[in-house]
Length: 311
Image 1: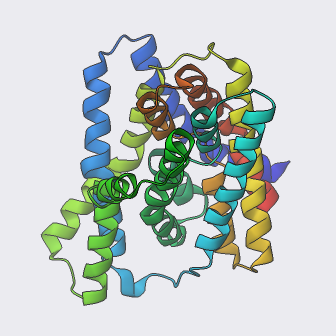
Image 2 (image 1 turned 30 degrees about the horizontal axis):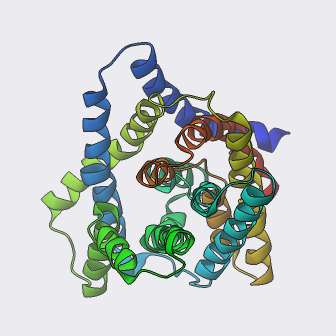
């Protein structure tokens, strides 16, 4: 109980910042363009600055066990298939809706919430692990759902969809900053002092601003539409996926740091990209939006609990 209270005290300020952003937009009536601009700054400048500065010191970072990718994405595949089965048998959804439902159970808010939580609870040594997952996360999971949807619609695979997903990932400022920073680190070139100090100042703003922006974004979604479906997605995301990741990590005998970091990522709430995908394919928009809000609210308690169980 003491461990839970300690970790809850560590994570509570982060979720309170999310609540602050939600309150400013929902009840403070801050206009949507403010939230959009802040989100764009976080994704395009603040978080990339934090990750580039971290990865530019690559030679001094602790080594990362790359098998964590097998544990994390292997669990994603299994939970995705389970989600599709539940969607088909329990909710009688078609193939396209099944793919979106399954994606909701595995695609987390890794950037805006995962990075701050990892830094506060597991420390900076966990960030290379997070970065490695982030590089492959969008490509693997967006490709998975795109192929699933294409197969459901045409019974054929589309390489154009895969290439479009790959281009989108490489153009993502977060992924690009990780790759560029890693390249700079391999070159073993020190950053000029004034550049490093500038990046440090921007990096300090990245975490609080990302959480406030997340709360502002959540204020745009409702929680009443399709609550049974959204509840099922939330259970898959907050309980089933972290359990599956932990089991695979144990089976592979991953080190504690890698295990804790990827289980933390798996325990995060549903990511906003799932809603974008639901809008793109015109299915489950309401339930997915509700699952964003519901899973984020519940994660304020479930994430510290999972960290306690991890020890």
